Image (cartoon, rainbow, N blue to C red; front, side):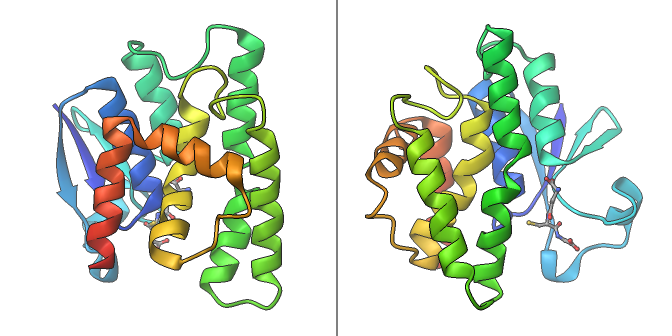
Length: 194
Ligand SMILES: N[C@@H](CCC(=O)N[C@@H](CS)C(=O)NCC(=O)O)C(=O)O
């Protein structure tokens, strides 16, 4: 049985929760209090002790993107990457460049000057990218969508970032929300707001 070292408010953990849900893989959860992380977490993921960590039979794998790629290979069905190698690379490239959105997102969280404009610029880029394609991964939902969704949900439902200027992005969010693992994450985010 897989074990996920998890924190509900962590969007990186959400990437793994959604991928596990999409794969329909059973797993146990060890919930980590991020404000009071146990010392042993450092041994599981040196040198930072960050979550998520996936424990597969005692083998510890950190880093959300690497974990999601591992899940894709270990549990190929249903696939979360397209069959075409070029489309797979394009999806991976998007996940690899997540910081184009993540950096302004965390700058807004820190209240940095000019951060809201930078975040708006990144959101415009994502909105344009979704024109003509239902999902960031291509024709079907997949790992590129999983890579971005947790931050979009937190922006919309916790931070009050206005998304109405990004209609394509809103339609993508609505499409993704039809998937049970994403709907579950939306409920998790709502529980964080309560
Ligand atoms: N690059 C890592 C980032 C994980 C991360 O930053 N997790 C946060 C919680 S959202 C954490 O554990 N922070 C504790 C720390 O950095 O000390 C990933 O993709 O998994």
